[in-house]
Amino acid sequence: MRPLSRRRLLGLLAVNTASALGLGTIATPSAAAASRRDFSPAVVVGTGYGAAVTALRLGQAGIPTVMLEMGRLWDTPGDDGRVFCDMLNPDRRAMWLATRTQMPLSSFLWLDIDRRIERFTGVLDCVHHGDISVYVGRGVGGGSLVNGAMAVTPKRATFAEAFPDVDSDGMYRTYFPRAAAMLGVNHIDPAWFETCESYRYARVSRAHAHNAGLTTTFVPSVYDFARMRREEAGEVPRSALAAEVIYGNNHGKRSLDKTYLADALGTGCVSIRTLHHVRAIEQDADGTYVLTVDELDLDGTRVATRQLGARYLFLGAGSLGSTELLLRARDTGALPGLSPLIGRDWGPNGNVMVGRANRPRDRTGTVQSGMPALGIDAWDDPRHPVFAEVAPMPAGVELWVSLYLAVTRNPERGLLTYDAGSDRVRLHWLSGQAQPSVDQAKALFDRLNAANGTEYRSDLFGDTRVFETRLTYHPLGGAVLGKATDAYGRVRGQRRLYVTDGSLVPGNIGVNPFLTITALAERNIERILAEDLR
Image (tube, rainbow, N blue to C red; front, side):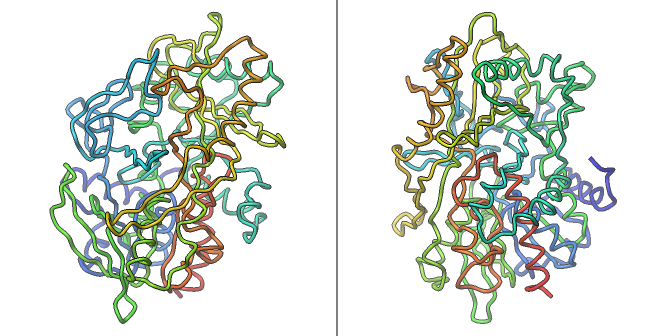
């Protein structure tokens, strides 16, 4: 990471001040003074990757901007002295308004490993839609709080296919590097990787992949690898090495509240209102966007409903959240001119989870880093393209299990529609649509098993299935770039309304998508500032 700038220091101070005083709005004094309660020139819904980029660049341009975040600011330690709980000892901080954890890996030896918890506005939400469940982050920083930190750039050919109207040369020359630098992407020391205990599990999978004639690659990360090295040496408290992953990370991860959002707050033009759930969008006769916003308490109870006006409105609430707002506005007539293509081209990024049972001599280790650093790269296989991250199982005991989250090339797409009766969006995705992903993953892992004398685990996903496709960490699509929006995220049929998140990506990008979302947001807001907000 570069040395902390004055802007980032001011932003971090604003975060710490809001946390210490229990404030619902995070802002520097100048931003707080400039922000009227009922109107802001620019409003950004959400605080995830695209939203954070957008807010920073608006703030740098001197445009007063309010960000609305459904979750809380995660900056206050609990009774145990930690902000986040870990995977092995979950409590109410783990899940969003749930009374039970909902782990993607839900059983071991067919025994249920989920736990009962107190209902609370926790950091991880599992949104159920029939045959698939979608994991999303809740809090200032969105998905950056709960992901595995893998900052992977997609293959250029895959990106170009997904975005034929985007200049790929410009993306790979300018915007991907800019996003990586701002996010604090770093690389593991290969020499340390070969000897550390933290990645014994990854070395086992690498050897098995090479035995099968497959290629592996190190994966860039926004987790501080230098700190992880000190964790293993016992020099600092453990975080990645203490099963802190999907329920948040207490130390080494460079989540957005420490990077883009801190910089945005430091401009003095951006404020963040937490526990604010945007429920609907409409438009006044003068063109002002009017947002209906529910204010929540820490138990998820609605304590007030207010309206906020904006001249420029940026949707960064994620694939499900942004698409829901657009569909509700279109189908209720609040914004009747919106595109019929909204809700289309949704996909789970071809996600498949699978586990393999290793031979006794192939120990995966009792200490496993929760932040993956290696992937099996078979994306260029013409019949069975797969990029499989080598995932941890940080149980604290030897399990002899290799676990993977695979990204496959699945052409199937889901559809999001608005249901007026429930006033909710429905995701139409059938279990059979995951079969192309299963076929591709099976071809790769059959090779691994055949070459190494290993077999699949059938006890990890709550029943006897081997391939888990009923969940995704990578929801994509619903307001796709160049279809529901123009080539820069402007929503068709409206002026001064934009999408800036994973809704823009058509269902499948071949790798963990947050770096792509960040880079696209950098590209898009640069053009929007130049042409729309002069």
